[in-house]
Image (cartoon, rainbow, N blue to C red; front, side, top):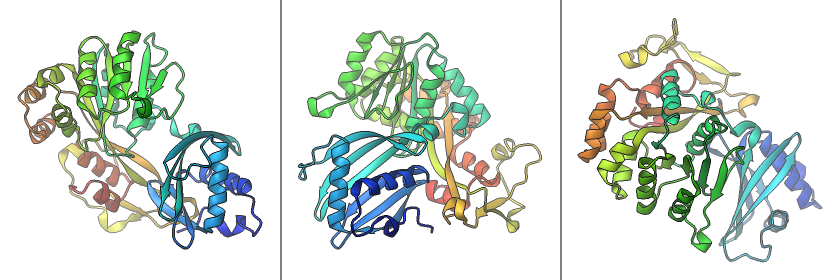
Length: 402
């Protein structure tokens, strides 16, 4: 695996922390790094980059230099340099070559010093349109229909780091400028969206999702985006808002579309009001894409048995073959470059609404989804597999039920 940031080249004996920091950010931004990790250990401090969801070690720096580097970063980001006992957070906007990026910093004390994690928000690559997410054409048409509704609840679900915020932002970008007032509640605000009134929670002073949602309902909104539904008050208020004239977009951490319904019911939402409000549920996961520069077919996989639901959705004259990446400079020797979204979407019909009212388990909703011939995550994954976008190993990791 290739090293992105050569620590030895930028760390002479008299290294300037500010110059090292600039080089570190530049290397991270231009190599698709989502997070920079500076982790204190007993003998030295580890430096690592997260690329395409994986941690990539970049080498070690001395604990003394790490302290100087972290102090410099905390200073320029407005964090308290003297505070070593409590977690601290900060934000920073920097120029990395021809790109301006936002950084969100989090520092925590550890037994060997301080750990610093820097999340990178690169507006040039991270803000996407709905057509760029990887949705199937039929799913995309359904999404357009759902977000055009004047009111109701749309849930986006998936594990942490599955791209839920990216999907919500893509929806909001499509909706902005359509003579409707859009407000958001986030934790924290990740991107400044034109035409959208964005707010964020502040737990230190008691401003949580539930309080902000109640306050925003008095601001005459048309569309409300709730960054996460995590408690009963937020869930009940979101459903009430969706039933009284607002379009509400929200996220949960459920791993399947059907389980997002279970999550809402477990949080205390009345099943009848949920069934009336719910317009659609989109579940998503991310898988690594095969690097196009070193993509290689696996000849023994040319003849594959596929379900009818998958085969019907294959492009005309498409070859059903598996591929892998050999590893090259473009993908840092991993065989993967970038990530792809896999989506499972349903808009509840009368049958599914009755299942919700009856508090039926997720398994029954899954049966109704299959009966309606809607694509499941496994089927979308197989489509991505046989069209050469990802590997069987990736799907096995992300979708163990495949």
